Length: 357
Image (cartoon, rainbow, N blue to C red; front, side, top):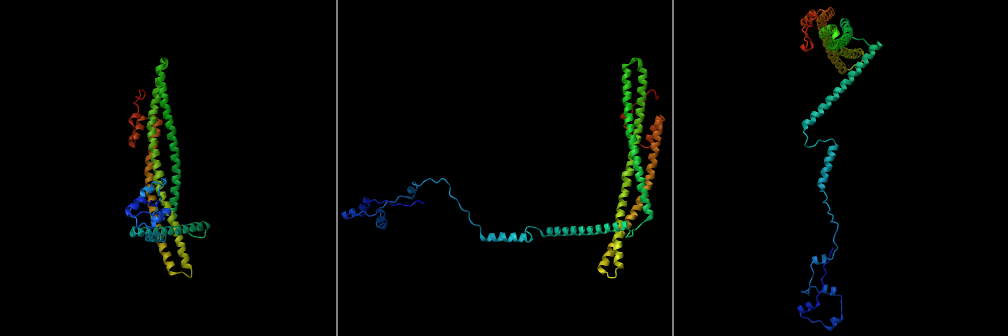
């Protein structure tokens, strides 16, 4: 920091005060600064340089002065600590709605309860399955329904084999038709370039075109047959089998809770609350089991009727189309398509050749 320095003016001070200096004072040369500071009140004409003049002698400051930030208020610190303690203790923020927190809590409790019930049911069903395989527990059996289910699975397995073979026949016959078309085009091209064999090449070209056209009609019939069998096997039968799987799962759950109820009834010491809960669970699973058993019976009956109708139509189509194609009866082949409402693209059918006319 700069200091203010007062420089004395002896002559001006003497003139202003009207006093003359004595030789003794001139001989004695005391410290000017000390004497002037002691008699500062008596001098009125002492010139003092301003602060800005003294500051000109200082070195230039290169670095700016650092400014200290004010300390936070103690009240704010305490409030922050209190809010953090409240959050760590599991408290709620004041901005959150209490209704939303209660809904979240109830949803969490419901999920936990669902997981608990699922775990208990899975344990009981697994125990029941193992006991049935080991012969330590009885199972509920519906002989008539079980035979119908086994018959359905066997029919589906056989129909899947028919579907596989029909797709193979359709694929191979598609290659045959494509080959006949290519062969007819090759014969027609050679007929234009070989005048000496033109009639023979044209005759064979027309024959291959006629066969390929009949093959396209048969291909449409085969595709319709494959599509219908695929819908029957992979959609209608599969839907019924899904219901059967649900029925079998319900049967296992029912037998598991039935076994628990029988054990509680046979035990000499049984609590009334546990017995009431077991009876309630048994009744619920029994109602679900009977409902699914009725659904399976209805679906099996409708599936059998639908299967007979669909396959009667498709087998008749397959027989008429194949026999008409290989006998060369184009009229019967086209009549078969009209009978079963099978539409073909008009661009794929070529006009009749002179051999057919």
